[in-house]
Length: 599
Image (tube, rainbow, N blue to C red; front, side, top):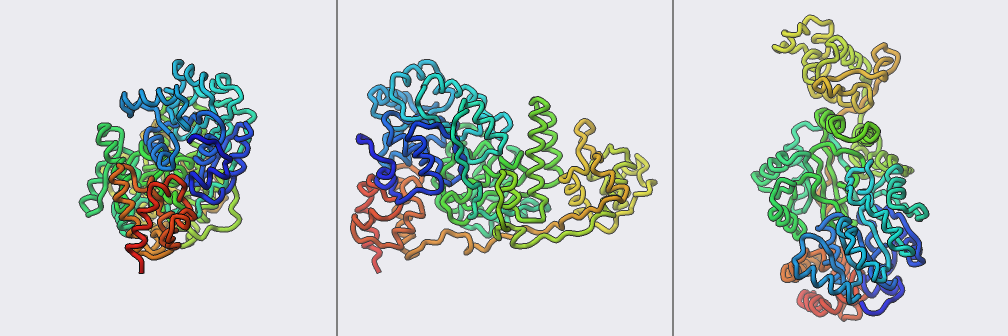
């Protein structure tokens, strides 16, 4: 872009938007004045505009530090559609492309450059940048700097040097999720001592949260996906084997699914990711958490966790990939006692210092609290981020189907007694066998059929006892002894329960409620047939240019066109999302589709 303009003018002429959202205007004004900023906004909240606009309005090159190639590629493709001269310097580009970027950098013709932290901090590259005028430095996915966080990247620790290298250049750290501890580490590690904190609400009201104990995971997944036919979404699994098995099972049931994990060769991984990003309907990506950070696909309609995530921050970040376009989306998390034991073992066996392990356990316990709450999920989630939702949300499973509670005092005492009488050396399966009076070889070998607690738990079935042990673990009444093969042991919290001095009330497990398809599907505001015709034309253009369809236009823009039915380029220019560059590129084509589908 050749001519600098005020942010408000660029907002309309480049991005096709009529106004700012939330704190965007305040962030941009602060950075335009040369101030540093820490920006926390939920996924889909408009973080990228907070650095893209001032990068274009201030003189010089905007440098954006990004951890993932996919993120860079999507952002650059979208900016180029808007007429912005943007580029990404990473290991995936060709030698020819790299040479062109260096040439453009030397010539001063680039507006915004995306770069990985390790490449940015190379001496040769830093030396070249110091000879250029820099408008700002934006550090995206800034939670990666935190060793307490869920996606630590050691390369981010080098970025504090930028303060000395580029004095006077405003620096921004941006992320969609960070609790108070992570925020402070971002400030400290990036040398943003005087930076202003812009903290938006973490609430994503368009997302419906469902959390349920694992009963029959594949059957639960298929039931959930049945209400999402024809929609694109992500299914997260903890292990690579589980990814492959789940993808194969979905395909065998007629659901198109692709795997994504680190063991796949780079070519297959890239093809599967590109297929998912380009898909408009009905593709499920089954992935480990290696997939997702920085993915800009706006029309992900659901996210499923088949296993317990490592922390509430990770859960929030991953579920936040649904519904970026603001349309209704849904999530489901399945978890069980085995998940809890495995997660704790992963932390226990890790190489992190004890202090870090304590923090990680605390973060996981916060997620367990959300899983086991009988109240509003959204209130519990936001509370962990220091935000208060004054009333239940009405859009989560516990609001739609309020949880029942029951007096579990007597069964809890029986469970604790069984643990103690067996020497606190056994896991849930064996303890349940003892309580139910199941005569297994293992019970006979240890003589546990002679214990007073043998067979005293007939009031609950196996699933009922598993639920009780899981909820006792979530409350910290019992914990796993990882040095003794995952045996359950009682904590100090359990002693007053065992002595009958404290009552225990637990939630009854219920099936997750899923919305009817009509409640969630993207609703075009205008003529549905016209909306579909516009989508088809968008798909043709995207295929021709080899970019995801949403890079051309979001569904929200097509919906607005279908509603307004503009008859001229002047009228089309008033549609949100229709900036000057897109009007020049696609305006006549859009008007032709409108004319062909005129009633």
